Length: 391
Ligand SMILES: [Zn+2]
Image (tube, rainbow, N blue to C red; front, side):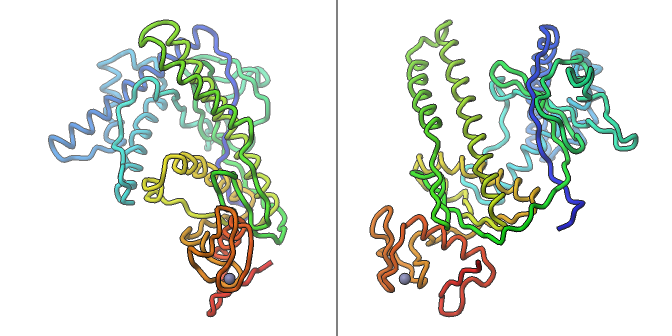
């Protein structure tokens, strides 16, 4: 593997702004959101009136004029304003690619209410010419503070060291807490080969089942958190629309959401880490957007979780020199791993698989995981449809 390849890794740290700094950060959120919505409006208008599609580049050219007309934008660092156009550009690009991909609900870029706008970004932390920090995100006072242009030198808790070359700094508000999120370019370090390959089937009862026969459970604390969330949401619904008790209930729900999100992410990190450390090749089913739309609610909620798990898995694998392959998911649960016979009647029950042709019996999930692995292996299937496992 090429040693010069890199991956982007993010490092997140808690910030402790002063009252003045926090006010400046809230104001930056307000102004960047205003700019985003105005730029979106401008693009819509330009398209409606002249059939023109504006680019981020064209819109950025107007920034100077904007700062003259609305001096309050002078309180926001220029790169932060430019990044707003990049974000809008990204929203448009992913919209167009969803349209192209035939998604049923492509979701046109939307105006951002304040609940949906919680970060701004400094897009250049590193001066490549001088090979040193710019003023964006530069650690000061032996790592006790960082430089945040137009906000100040903000207190930070660097609980683990930054690694690689810092590219950008994002300031994020999570309910009532501020974070600095650095994106760094980190050189890939290939893990030693283990000679092992695995197929992973994801499910609702179990988080994952591997072709090795390992069952990965959905953690209990996550289920407990979801239960708590349902109770809090009911309380929130009972409260009057305006009022203190309602506001408090809304915040409680937001905090529980945040806790679940963190726990889930942590669980995904650990599960992905174990898989990447243990296997050279990891195969899973490709999730298809069209499937998600058709399927039931429980399934689609899980799909969202799996999609983020799979992208995390792919990232970790990339930086460790491992391979992750998403395979065609069709019939993986109906196909007999031993003889290749495919049919609904093979599936005795939710958990039991028994082939009507060769009599092979197995746990249904493990059989599916083995089929998933077989599909990812080169020439795993010969002419007679018999699958060979390459150990
Ligand atoms: Zn069979």
